[in-house]
Image (cartoon, rainbow over all chains, first blue to last red; front, top):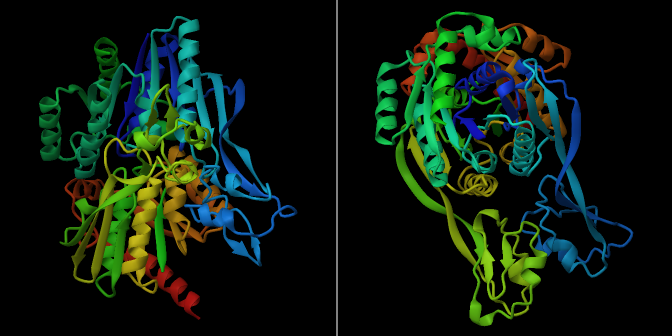
Length: 290
Length: 288
């Protein structure tokens, strides 16, 4: 079983549209994991049935019992996150600022502070319209610990893949280089980097690849909107050569991406045109290289 | 006045708007643009100024001092993030997991875990006429964006007047880095595109801003592609649509080269004027 993670550094490069097309082409051979838990969109194209859902608890927030509190202020003194302001003479916890470190209850002489476990989202196990299993999630508003929710989604996807003897886990990762991306990458066999020939696309590709290198994972790259800027496209290809990244394919700047999405379809379902053929070849190459 | 430019979905045109709007506003007044998308900061590709200041940014982590340690296990017990682990004869610190709460360090009975600096990123400050530009970038391998965003905001509060227009280019998504980047804003501008992904992620962003009790408005970028669902949603929810920026491949081409677009497209200029008027009206309203 191989785990393939699709990431992009920069948002809006077409990562999810491409991943959903791969998921459609992979059909029942794969398990889909949407690890872009912050702004998960793949369900809009793959129509998962949300058959099983579970709350996800992670991290804590401090809560002050005003009946026990003597307003001594020791909690506010030790808090490094400005999370315990005083309003109308009363200490209270600004939950947006609280990191859940648990330092304040340890110094409270009146035992007035408890740490409450946080429900930070839900995760789901579904069957998609192709019949493949899909694990996905929804992070609560402003929640922390998205990396941990990603790890939970991936663990479940792995269990399902092992039990059902699936050949591939296809993971849609999140943008950036921070904790959810780090969590998406851990344990992966192959990374697909989706980029675009813009100065930002190249800049973000370089940063996210630096992270991929730390994990020692082999990588391939898809250049989307490749005809938008030939000069930057060449720069990207030079970078790929230098870093030994497999060039999987170039896709044209094509509004089919948007049109398919508007119909709730993956690109390969929507239009049997040149771009579909390229995506089919790309998926084949990804499977062979992974 | 602090204005945060955010979006649920990535790649909707946040940075394009932030850089063009700040350059446009700076034609007549002093503006500071701050790139808080510290994981992938891109504004600097479009705004080139003179570097006036550069500093490394640090977070504080505990350092184990073996000779003072009695291996009492308290540090491991108090750390909610599993960043301090006691093995048979030593303490291990995992800096990437540490939230710099100081609990292990200050509660240690023998002061065996003093807090020391660890570099997490770099801040740069540029000048270009009326426009100041500050960006921070997270070192690769550092997982937490929030502390660097918080320190960058502190830098801005120390070096710039609150009366000035401050534009914050926020990270995408709706999780903790976005909250840190938007929670002090007087106005949040959500940039979206008129597609199902755009709408879905916009609703997440709108719910986040409602939770934060923020004033916010929407800008529809690439107007003309997709469908009208985003506009209908905004109408139904009584969310002001500040501007609709037309879809045009030529804009994407200029963007791909790292160029600003507003001087070359009269239509964009017109849209920026609308946004500027909205901001100024709000700013003057606040002042009264």
